Amino acid sequence: MKGTTRYWLVAGLDAMVTGVGMILPRGRLKTAALSFGMTQVALGLSGMLKPEVRQ
Image (cartoon, rainbow, N blue to C red; front, top):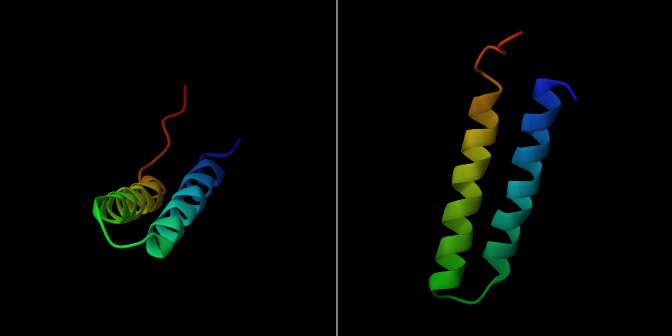
């Protein structure tokens, strides 16, 4: 799997977590799902910016 494909997959799955968090009722679970999902999306997208290490 190409490195960029992996990061797009991570970002996409975590965007779904964020979407689920948006439909949850108000409370700690909603806050946790939104925070976790948005953080992971940011990490997945920022992972595409780093150079790949070839061995």
